[in-house]
Image 1 (cartoon, rainbow, N blue to C red):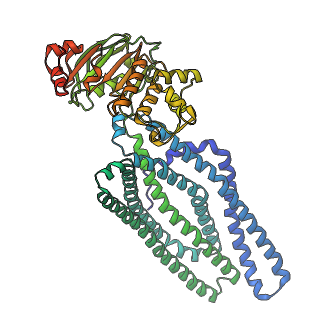
Image 2: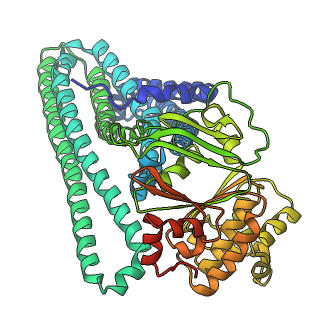
Image 3: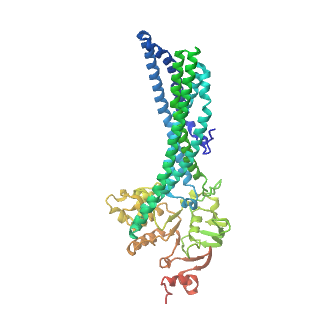
Length: 579
């Protein structure tokens, strides 16, 4: 017995509803195509006996009629295939679009655990496979199933005794198809997993090729790649072997059925129960059954593979989303930049707190540096300020407005992030700075000037229209970082978050970026994650974090005079007390 889909193909039906008109016309063409098979069976029963008589006056009109019906059938087939292709591709596009939108809302913690190669494969190859299954179902599987029903019905009308012999084999054939299909689905899932792993390794290999060469690790990477492609080959081979085995097994059963019909037909003709024209029509129908059976068998295998792909796509929907906006949201207005953490507690995993009883007040326009060992909670504070996560307990206030009551989009338009390693999308420098926002040329130039980027940009061959290559590899690290600063200040944010924005730069590039930062920070509240403490000595407030709590806070001079953890960290970096 055929197993129902567990992947949720029925959930895709609403995506087909906007295309009802095309589907209706395509279905009409499908019915014409199937009906023409029955007419051809009837005409062949009249034509072949007359061919033996040599009477052209009787043969030629029938041949003309056969050609006309055949032409109508092929035109209907063209209409069916071409009209139904559009809705199938639209479903794939809608599915891919919906999943990409969903991906953008997945919690960053969950997203970081996913392989970029695997995600790329799911949104490309898996989505295309689902589209192919929908298309083949519409233009091939359904017509083939209808053809089977129509031809078998006509054969029952011609001779129900002969047809009964064929129908006795049908459950066995259906069981075989289901058995093979289930195994093909399992083998396909393994194959797709191996392809995803291979795509992930390729991404890592391309990204880390300079590091591989630096360590002379090419043989290790080649062995690992060879192992991955061998596993992928074996998984694909197992799928192909199952499909290859199914065709001869089903084919043998078809031949046995055909032979049984011939024997029974000979017996019935000899007894006078069956006429030759009826036998020819019947045998024509029998031949017409072979093609749709083959199509249904092959398409069922592809359906199982598509079911595996759809399941992998649906797994993205199960990933946790970032917190939804409250309804209604509190109007944020233009922020001054006052921040207040009041008894904040937060944990990524229940029972393992990252922040505990955290209290901190930041005044508008202050520059605050967060220092402390890895895992102290510095990055977590940034994720809370950007509303990537919400506090479990306590309040986080912007200008006395609770962040849990405002929309994330309104908040992020006034809080800008400059990450440690800036990433840009391929495109022009102007597009990289705008980053999907509307801005005049003057606003663009002003942002670049604040970031100390304007001068080097206008010296490039195409200025602001210079195209950035993937990952910005055609500009230096310092230039890329200044583009990121310009991107941050373009929206005139009230708060800037700097994640050690100069740690990966040389001294000359760092000086240029520091100048850009100094200009960009004027008049804004700035929070800096700092590991190199020499860069934050001029901060208005330095906050030392340990185990999710504030152990010290104050200016550089005050903290150095106090002693304690901050002074210890400074002395490790050869920063001494000013005499």
